[in-house]
Image (cartoon, rainbow, N blue to C red; front, side, top):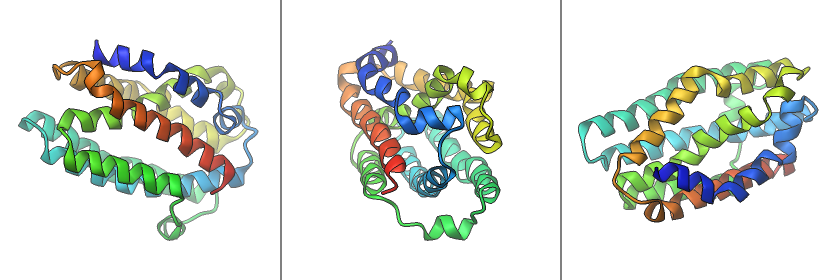
Length: 212
């Protein structure tokens, strides 16, 4: 399976993500709330642009079913995920206006520019290879730190993280992996996009921890 090989190749990057202090402290409940607030503001901006990139990918889909997959992901991002974020923002004393006014940091800008350029210029499956690390790594982070989360004393952290342990989220990751595994493309062809996005995921956590 192409996705199994992609995951294996990216393991060194992903292990750094699992051990990143933002991730570890968030799941343990020791992350300063101001760092989490900064992350939420940045991630809201990310989601807006992520949906735009998915819409671009839909236009490059080789068939209606795959176009539907990309559009459903885009729709889910701007409805369900953003609604969840609005609730989280309120819980930490922020508003949607705060999120809309927040200036994206340089990693955020660069990551989004990368995704949108891939989805505007490359093939559909290359786009999906670039999207997959975001979805998949969040699921694995939650699995790796499941025991920490169970003892996490911060309710908003538990609420945020529990999404990535849900059966629905696991099914989504499985669906996206299936799209790539059925593409007929080799891991070698998909690797540059999967690797770059994995690196951006690591850098996004670092930027959130540093606050810039």
